[in-house]
Length: 110
Image 1: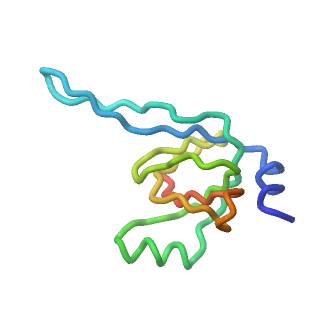
Image 2: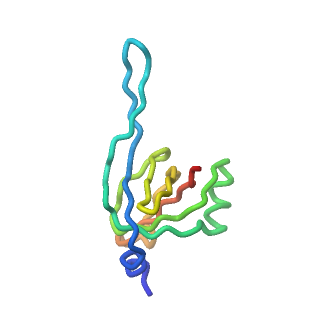
């Protein structure tokens, strides 16, 4: 079964949010701007290879999120999954180099 099929069958969606900072006279305020919503996704535990790769940079990755479109995620963006989980993005990879499926490496937050 292809990853694209697994994404379709998973029945979960995500909302991609990016932190934005606004400076005012009283200080800096951070808000989350929605970049994309209702994006079909499939969330899996990160592989040991991916965990080791990010571990070399002192980053923790717990999950791999598969989507069928490039979201342009940046390190520090947030993914809110329809099942209630929230993940902080550390990287986005064109999974097979064919612009069909992307893997977003992220860390689940409590």
